[in-house]
Length: 185
Image (cartoon, rainbow, N blue to C red):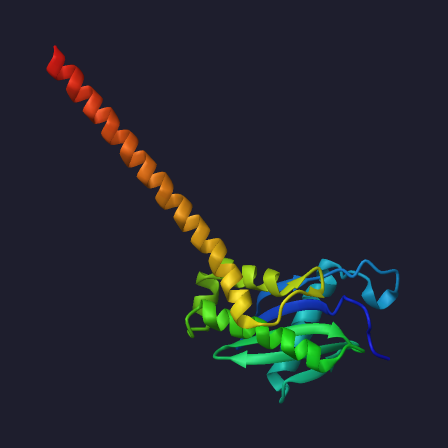
């Protein structure tokens, strides 16, 4: 049976090459059905551990794990995993995952590895938030995702520059005022 709801994604997890989790984000579907029940911390840890082991052995890009459809994309020393409901459309999940991975690739300037992801964790998490929100796919176009994340970073830089310019002008004004007062004495 196909899932016709808005909620497509149960989790997004990034593993390193040894199967250890770097990043995970789980989404609650706000449903009363048991397959959508939120996982406890222990269940999440067990799920990630078992999935990490299964990823080490898996070939291909898709697998079924604990009644969940898991799509993964390997880039350098990382495995990007998207967990969805078993009944979900694989092509939709694939476009979500590929959009996120390509956006991260754009944001990290084609240098996607464990170190760069950890160094730029804020950008990666913002890209994830722009891709999926509360289990609902928001955007799959990597260019749009990357531009939205970049705009946030650019606004912060512009604000810091404006503050710096204002401080410089104020400091120059204070120095001129002090010199004027000294010369008047």
